[in-house]
Image (cartoon, rainbow, N blue to C red; front, side, top):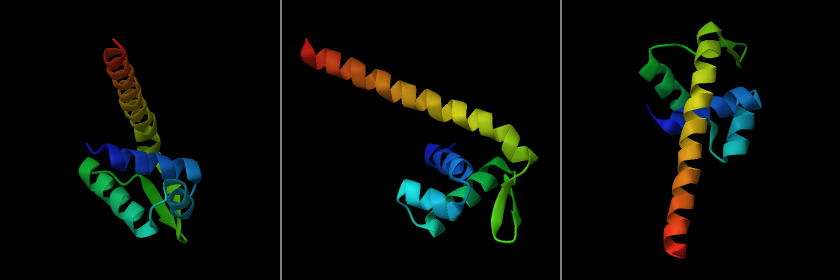
Length: 92
């Protein structure tokens, strides 16, 4: 599982569009679309329905969403903890 792909998925959900997510993530739309397609391929699920050039989170996407948030949150908490451990070791 690729963390970057999960972060891209969450950014698209939170921003509402790939365009808005690309501004937030400071990445090109084609790159985000590629990340999303790779995640969907990896999961074997389509996470969005495509309607009139808009993405709408589908049932599978709604089920994956809380798990993706949890994974990204855990990784971010781990990064914070490791930084704290590292800074405490350097301070000693």
